[in-house]
Picture (cartoon, rainbow, N blue to C red):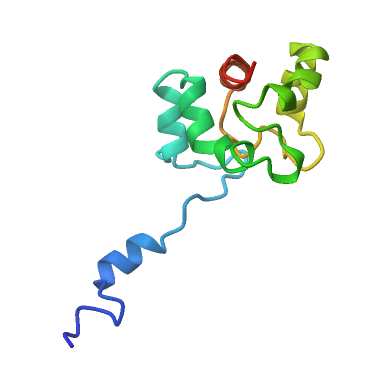
Length: 125
C-alpha cells in the first residue's frame, strides 16, 4: 500500500477536505471571514421552493417523519391548509412540534420559506 493513500483509498488531502470544518464562530466586533458557502448562496438571490424542498425538507416531508405532512398527500395537508397560510408560515419559521425553526434551512430567508411552503402546498392538494 502506498504511503499517500489511506486504508479507505483516500489521499491525505481528500481526508482533510472531507473532515474540514463547515463553519466558524464570528464574535461581534471582531473581523470575520465571510466566504462561507451559505453567505455566497445568500448573495446569489432567492432559491426556488423546489430547490429548498429538495435540499432541506424532503428528508422528513417525503416520509412523514415525526408527523410531518407528506409531500403530495392532500389528506395530510388539508387540516394545515385550513388553518391558513399565515399559520403555516409562522410554524415553519418558528418551528412546530418536532420541526425545528426554519426546518433544517438555517440560512433560508422568510421569503424562501414562504415560496417553499407554496411549492409544497401547490403539490399537495
